[in-house]
Length: 493
Ligand SMILES: *[C@@H]1O[C@H](CO)[C@@H](O)[C@H](O)[C@H]1NC(C)=O
Ligand SMILES: *[C@@H]1O[C@H](CO)[C@@H](O)[C@H](O)[C@H]1NC(C)=O
Ligand SMILES: *[C@@H]1O[C@H](CO)[C@@H](O)[C@H](O)[C@H]1NC(C)=O
Ligand SMILES: *[C@@H]1O[C@H](CO)[C@@H](O)[C@H](O)[C@H]1NC(C)=O
Ligand SMILES: CC(=O)N[C@H]1CO[C@H](CO)[C@@H](O)[C@@H]1O
Image 1 (cartoon, rainbow, N blue to C red):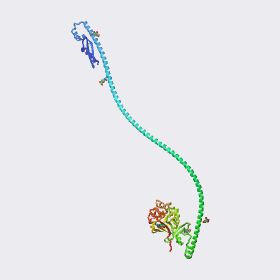
Image 2: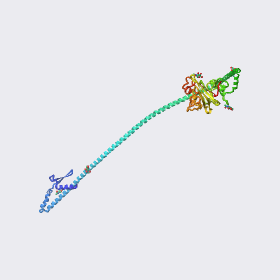
Image 3: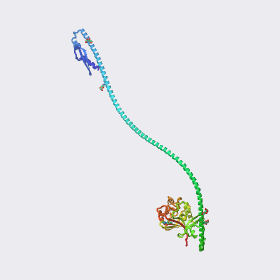
Image 4: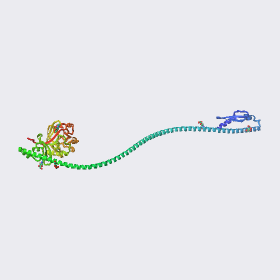
């Protein structure tokens, strides 16, 4: 730079452009965009300088020393002036340089500013992006927050709903409590009333008890009187019986005269006790009726009905049904000892029949009648019962008759069952199912001890008086008779 200025200076020194006249010269220097103008005083000698160069050569000889010295001086002064100018110039240039530097600095500042601005812009854009991101995050946060808020709101709504319900329920509970206390009061009142009533009742009871005591005394007196009257009645009956006996005795003594032979037979065969109706018949009693039977080697006595008419008579009746007045749904003990009256419906008793049929061989005859006026019978040639230890098991053989077949009564070897003792071959309890005591199988084709059904109600009965092989199932019979007679019984000849 400095070199260029020096070059320009030398140029101006020698080839400086003359632009002005009148004593002063003007020089212009262009340096980049700047131009410098210098005004220099005009010099005649400078004009002639080129001449003077030539001049000395031309005038070398003729020239004085003084002149040349003067010229030197002049040259020196010019040189000095020039040097001064140069100095000035330099100063100028330095000044301008300073200005340039300042300008440069300015541009640098500008550039800095620009870069700063750029960086700033970048920063700004980055900041904007960050801000956008932040805004996004904010939006999301706000979204979440609103959602949470909504949920919170909903929760609070449901909570308020629950609170309302709670309040309603609490109210209801309060109401119920009120009602409860009301009811309790009422109950207390009622209890008080009841206690009062109880007191009244107690008093009435006491009164009644005294009354009852009085009446019991009266009843006792009445009973005494009744007893007196009834004893009077039995006395009368005894008298009647005595009269009858005397009449009978009279009749016998009258007939004794006519048939002395029969009398002797009777006398011979009149034991004090009869084992069965056959024995009664043999003793000469051919009238059907009630007789007292006694087991041999035993004090056991029974009043039995003897059938002296059917098939030659001599039958000991062990069962009879004909009007349904006697209940046949009885216990084991009752069937063992017998029940009913010999002139009415009855069961003679398993124990007696067991002992009798184990004494000798017996026949069994069963006579039946229906509700249409028909009658039939089943007869077994051999019949006996086992002991109580063997459940009065039934055994029979040899059938004849008009009402069925050998198995009409059931299976031989069946045990006896009652409502309280179940020995049948059914998972059920036949006695409880079909009523009465019998040699049930499971539950078998017969039951003559079932319920008595009267005419018109005697069909479609599962628990009636059944004899399947004669009238089918469900038919309940009108009359039944079971009777036994020794196998070797011989009727009247
Ligand atoms: C200023 O910037 C311009 C253009 O970018 C460049 O040409 C010039 O050299 C820079 N000047 C300085 C002093 O940095
Ligand atoms: C039985 O009755 C008669 C009169 O009917 C009476 O005189 C007698 O005292 C009575 N006998 C008894 C034991 O009450
Ligand atoms: C009764 O007892 C007598 C003697 O004690 C005996 O000989 C007879 O066989 C017995 N009769 C019966 C039926 O048990
Ligand atoms: C039923 O039996 C009784 C007694 O034996 C008898 O009097 C009556 O006539 C019988 N009834 C019918 C419808 O046979
Ligand atoms: C020869 C010449 O021009 N000399 C001049 C140098 O400068 C001084 C003052 O500036 C002048 O007085 C001289 O005449």
